[in-house]
Image (cartoon, rainbow over all chains, first blue to last red; front, side, top):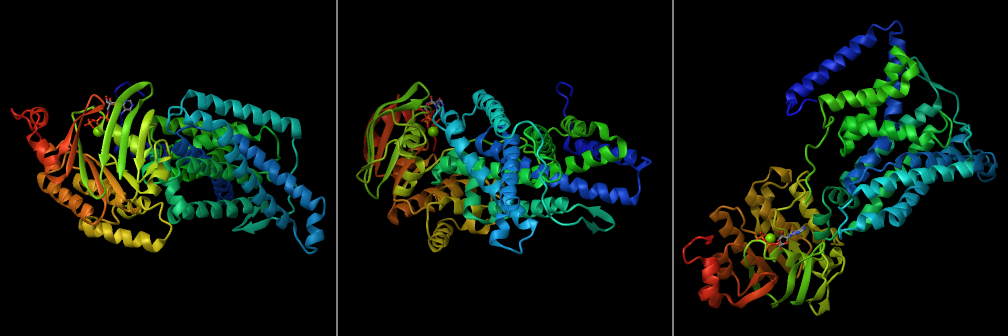
Length: 345
Length: 241
Ligand SMILES: Nc1ncnc2c1ncn2[C@@H]1O[C@H](COP(=O)(O)OP(=O)(O)OP(=O)(O)O)[C@@H](O)[C@H]1O
Ligand SMILES: [Mg+2]
């Protein structure tokens, strides 16, 4: 903020607390404030939050693993939504699913759609990494030299993927009529089933990711490569392979999130932009490069945005995420879980 | 075990090694000595494959390994322990060791090897669930060597294992290096602590300007005039004992 002016940890936290209290005080004075709406905002905020979190985790994973901010990450989200939609329509509208399982419900098709979005985007991510990013990250002998070229490559990739999607699906919005059943009532809040799916799937996948990273050998390898390519090489990890795995997992998560969001909004080729920015804000708020931070940042942005939209004004909904990001950057530049300095071997 | 012939390598376009020749016999300890910035670490990096070999050959166990991917070199049984006590600070001691055994296929071998490392360095056993970031310098070095031993290597290359450690710890680590050799491994050790290194090693090489300048039996090197002048410090200036 000021040159040579640095806040201490304690002061940072105090300021964050003050900001939170002012914010809570402000929205509690809103005329719309009551228990009912508060419950609604909480549930919706957490639901959007876990989606932001899943995309943000991917951005952070790629950042730690490849030393690059993947600006085309939103496009994998969008392509994932289209993959899910296409698979779902193929199964349900084509009545294929009923030919195989006569008693099937809509959710069977949706689960298969989610699965395909995850797998297809994962494989597509690996392909993109191998073909487009690998020649750039390889330059300089190691895999740590990632410069401006790769950032520009990310933007270029984003434009190319967007235009490809535009040719295939045209710019109109495609409704995703997932037949998931009637809305349910949770503690007095009526929640469409699509939200419940986001909530449950989102948490399940986040839990599975935690298990994968902390309890499996491959997860240990991913964490090692994310910290240092050189030491990973020296302990015998196939680093290029793991870089592909990291990129693939990140893209798979984005694709899954796309299909989770699809039925609630609409599926349209532009949907990747705004999610990229929101997920980016989440990652920054949580602490760039930190995976738990990305999830917590997602919740924070989701809750902040939803409560502002509901209690203050819904007309600037997309700006709130950035307002929050700017405040956090000013007060606590490392984010909640930020690492001060990334150690590099 | 390891034969380096006319090794030329460097960083970017800067050539550091100008045709180095070395030989490490099976089950021996060989010391690689030399001033700062002469290319000792660079030799090790070329052997472990993290930098490219421009010219010349590196032969390990009868096979040319220059420019193989680093993980293949580890699988063949050649492991490098880096200079900076590089660990994964956000992981526990145990996780660090498990990563050292990443190339192992069987869980049983992994657990056996962890036991083996704890036998060499009991301190690590006491600290096993602690984050590596909280270890002392000596413990970090033990962890690095231990991690290097995890993959059942045939040969281990240690880069300045005594750097910035108290004499007592240095002695302990050197005793363990000797023990490691007795247990059947071959050791190449880069050292600034020349006197200690020559006491430990069977054979020594001195590198200067990217080529091997002097070589010989350690006992002879200890009395070699040029080594004495430059390292054992007639005037005691560069001595590091
Ligand atoms: N990553 C790098 N990029 C560019 N130059 C490097 C790099 N690493 C080392 N060098 C240069 O290569 C030369 C030899 O370095 P090296 O690390 O092999 O020296 P060393 O003999 O191990 O010295 P020390 O005893 O200080 O560890 C030095 O001049 C150094 O500046
Ligand atoms: Mg060195």
